[in-house]
Image 1 (cartoon, rainbow, N blue to C red):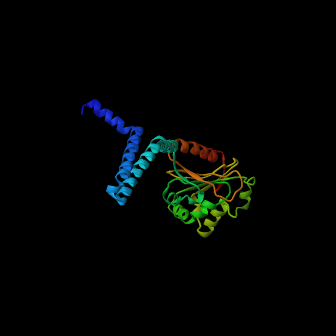
Image 2: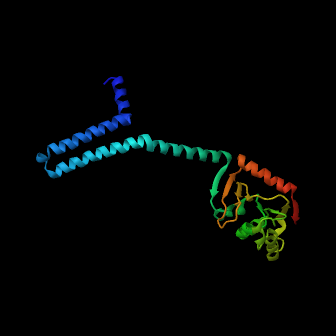
Image 3: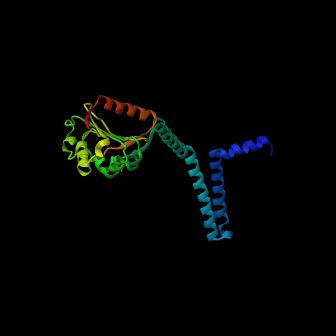
Length: 247
C-alpha cells in the first residue's frame, strides 16, 4: 500500500461517519444473514448473530454520538476546569474549605515563626489552638492579635462570650509570664474577614452578608503570591494604623 492510500485509509478510520456507516452495513449484513440462514443455523445461532448485529449498530451509534456531542462537552468541561484551576493557582489560592471549622492550622501555630490572628471580637480560633499557643509562647515565639475596636455594628459580635483579651488574661492567670510575647492591636477599620497569617501564607476566613446558620468558607493564599501580597498589605496597614492595647 502506497503512502497516499495509507493516509486515506487512516483518515477514513478516524472519520466517525465512515465508521458509523461501516457499523450500519456490518449490522445489516449480520441481521440479513441470520434471517436468511435461520433454518441452516438453527434458532439459537440465528439469535446470537442477530444480537451481535444489534450490538454492532448500537456501539456505532453511541460512538458517533460521543464523538460529535459527548466528547466535545467533556473536553469543554475539562478545559474550563483546568483554566479555572490554573487561574486560582496563578493568583495564589492553593487550598479551600467550604466551612471555616474544617481549616486545620495546628501545625502553623506550633512551628511558624510568624503568627498574626485577625478577628472582629471572638477568641474562637485562639481557644481552638490554646494548647498549641501555650507551646508556642513557651518557646519564645510571638503571637500578634488584631481585633476590631468597635464590633457592635455586627449582631453576632455582641454575643461573643470570650474576646481575645479574655483569652490572654486567662493564659496569664494560669501561667504567669506566658503572655510576654503576645501583642494585641485594636483597629478602627471594619474588618471584612478573619485571618490567620503564618510563614506559609494566609488563611482568609470570609463572612456571609446575610444572617444564616451555615458557616462561611475559607481560602488559603500561598506565601509570595499576588493574592498573598494583597492581603499581607492590608494586614500591615491594620497593624500600622492600629492601637496597641497589650502589653
